Image (cartoon, helix red, strand yellow):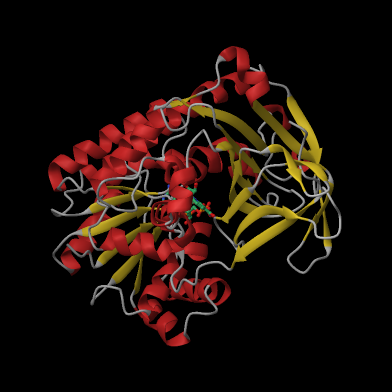
Length: 469
Ligand SMILES: NC(=O)c1ccc[n+]([C@@H]2O[C@H](COP(=O)([O-])OP(=O)(O)OC[C@H]3O[C@@H](n4cnc5c(N)ncnc54)[C@H](OP(=O)(O)O)[C@@H]3O)[C@@H](O)[C@H]2O)c1
């Protein structure tokens, strides 16, 4: 069922202006928003509707410059604003009353709020009498630990009892990335890949989420979160699922969800004894990072960033090596690495095939390393298959043979695909509740070991490749 009414909590925030509004504008441009669509922004600022519209216009000019102005204007026209504190159940109920008085039918309440407000806001929405078929979309991080995720799931189950089983929608934009949506088809549609996709042929899989960006004014948010909670427990685990899960018999919501959960259930967190060798955490010291224009920008030490309390020992770099205990993957190492203020931005999966070792060639024998397949996940990265060939003029030596393909052309940003699924009543791109919990189960022992100081906190200069782990 289509939801025409979007109640956006946190509508004046960074996420709303950077991703949600631009995605809605691209859906407008593609004529894919339900007719009569209205967005009601909610925040505590004492703004008029005009102020909210002016703010939104400015955000769209900055973050959606390629969307035709007519589509941006049409979206602005559909914006409303309500001042409310989501900590107040009465305020939340008032927002729901205003929307339902305006138009009958289901609504989507989208929580683009600080994560500590999720539980209270969901409880207030549960008690506010949402129309049947309504949905609550929750941004990541879904909880700050396993217990938190479980209690959010319990609350959402209560909402679902009142308004319908599709009430909960857990957002992870990575499931909307065209590149990530292509991972499973790439494996399934290409027999050479399908035949090699196991531990006999793949030694190691890396998932990298490396950024040149540092805190950019968001130090207090990041300091309470850290790299492991910010991107590894959610975005990177979702990409790992698409890379490693068993192909489903049918590409439907249930089959896909089941295969993802099965994979994470087979995944082993590092044991207490292996924590120091299989995990690595660090934070950056002062340095210089490259900008988009190619210049170098000075970055202070993480501990000197505004909003950061150095005593918390929050990691800006996180690495975990994981094993999957199933027939396909026993013997392959999965390495997840995320970092801020690094030498370059790369968000990609790298598949390292097993190296053939010593190979006899004309004119001698050569030690041949691993062939790799690199798949860009988010950004301008392409797909590159790096093979080895014989060097024509150097007997007994090899040369790299690199086959590359540009990124897939895609008209819609990832958030637009997610919003389309959400507004049209689907759940193909929602993170299932049990999947979120499984992912927390894997990272909890690491978080505990780090917070108890069982793994040393290393340092790396901003603008470097990160620490040697
Ligand atoms: N920014 C990103 O790139 C990004 C990416 C993925 C996920 N997320 C997630 O999205 C959520 C929002 O992040 P953000 O970066 O947009 O944060 P933000 O810039 O700090 O914005 C927070 C928003 O929530 C509103 N708000 C705060 N307390 C409120 C309350 N008690 N009642 C009503 N509104 C309240 C704020 O407006 P007022 O202060 O005026 O009330 C503001 O509109 C977080 O859970 C974050 O983890 C963010």
